[in-house]
Image (cartoon, rainbow, N blue to C red; front, side, top):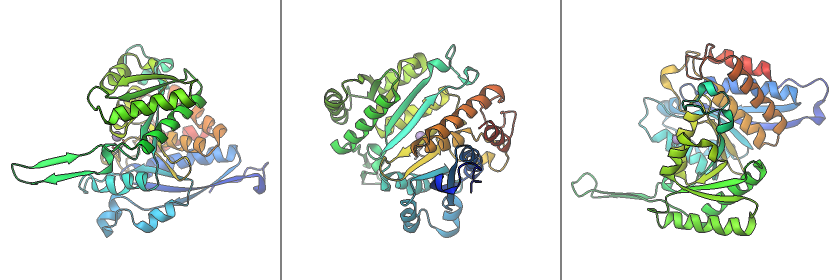
Length: 364
Ligand code: IPM
Ligand code: MN
């Protein structure tokens, strides 16, 4: 609960109800630091942030067999935003929690955009030679509800030498179009190079990316003539992330390609310690999370970098319309990254998890 600012008084305060899922491994620790920083911003900008914790994740599953109870999902729908730590437990078979919690929430709450900014804050933390903050500053708009992630497909003759496994990529005109429109709007509002790159594979995926490319061209020509359109194959995109990341402004792509290229994006911006993303439903409940996993081996050691979770909190405030508070958090993160941290990796920061949270909160 935020402490009320002395000047504003209750009736001028904007109130936001936030669902918080710490989740597995280091998730709860990093979310704690994100909340610390959000509370500092709330005091400064006269906001009231009310947090409701939800206990889902590997521990609950191992104890009760429940992954994401329908009742919890129904409650989550009532919030404008969810702050998520991490999902993934070493004692649970891969796929159960990821599909049952993360993907189910993304799908059922129709968070059809996964927004992943790739922004370098300090050249010391970039693995690329001669690349500086002015060279790495783009945003990936990943389609988040379709493609290879829907679970469409199946086995025939499973377990025999004749086995067939089919995994289908689902691309609907509606799903592709709403994603493209979001990306065009986002690129226009961002107002930088105003260049939107479609990342695909039109030379091989001649059905799926034919649909994407046609929709991209039609929507762009008709409704976004002010946005420059550009196309890159996914393989070339990974090459340019390394060679010429400065060529990109906003990239739009399907679910699987978006998953892959944003891990590379995270590395060139300084690693999983700093990379955050938002699962967006522009008219519903959105969910903000660090891109990295639950890092079980670092759990409880006060060594994990909380900046990705803090940046997820910053994206959340921005999405809620509190852009000044979001900017203040980003400025504080930049200051601490540049002036204090030795490294962005777990255990090498020169400070502990809580101390990094304290530093950023104080800088806000
Ligand atoms: C991500 C993750 C997830 C994904 C996994 C954990 C299901 O890699 O958020 O990028 O593939 O989307
Ligand atoms: Mn991923």
